[in-house]
Length: 112
Image 1 (spheres, rainbow, N blue to C red):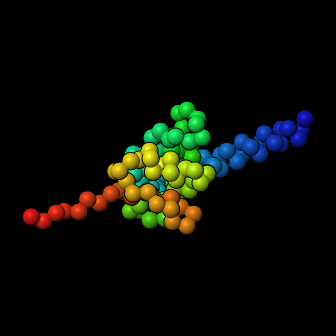
Image 2 (image 1 turned 45 degrees about the vertical axis):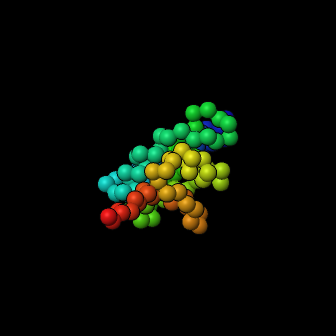
Image 3 (image 1 turned 90 degrees about the vertical axis):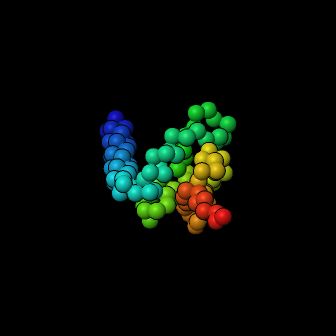
């Protein structure tokens, strides 16, 4: 019985630590271009593993690297093509080392 209680308390503690880490990252992203991109894309639908109603925030987590681009850590490598499809042509999505980097597409100004 004590073992089960210890497992539950360890799980609760791990969950609290995870929530604190998420809050810290979201606070660091607030007011930056990376934070704006994250707020725009985190609830977009993903086509992942033929499961219904999958969202980007379920398969990727933001991390702070630089404020001008959004850096995501993904839970599965299949998330990269799914994120590319979900965000469409409005964003550039690329893999850099262990991160998926999302930035806005820059449309060049044409001269007449």
